[in-house]
Image (cartoon, rainbow, N blue to C red; front, side, top):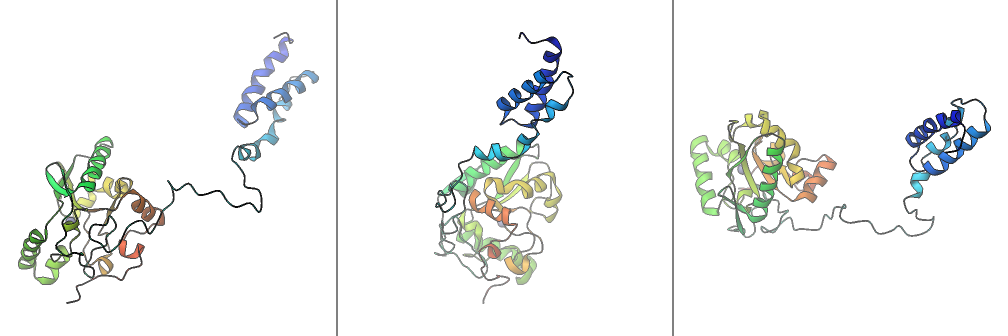
Length: 278
Ligand SMILES: [Zn+2]
């Protein structure tokens, strides 16, 4: 406060630069250049350069507890780590069950605890996740999420399967509709979705709609994967279905996303399931 004016004039500049250059050493950095300025007659920019060494990342690293060499690492914070053994891949009531043409549900007539999304039956966990995804989609102005088909019982799947086979023949029909007991829809974890007013409902062109694009990019954040991606028919046994999302929970969806693996069979190193065994 009692310093001569020219020095006062240089101080804010020094202070500003120091703050920009280093947050961690603000106090020492401010002290250093002002002392240098006191000793330097001309208010050149040189003193403000003196905090340069503080650009080194060392100070911020000292904020983090460092394990000394030879010491055991601290336990990993498991809110962020993936546990591949968390759920069964084979039990029908498991969040991670893999059902495909080689892996019928066990038990084959399994029925989940039912919940509802906009009046349509799905597993209760799926309903909750769909509500959250619908809110996210609305917020992103990508549309209003609709659920066209969720839980299908063994008996309903029988009807759906037989209808598609009658319409398209065995091969093409079964590329669209699973045999009863082999459908993810029976777990209640699958959701055939669309968006209000965007068309292409249960059609491949849904992939090109605003909602289809948003879902493909963001569903993982809500625990869903696009279960039958493009060009994966040889593995999944199903054609590209940009409307069919499978709830697997945020942990697995995030892990798959981070590893850039889109298909459950590949992620778990399970055999491809292009067709039924009989
Ligand atoms: Zn489906």
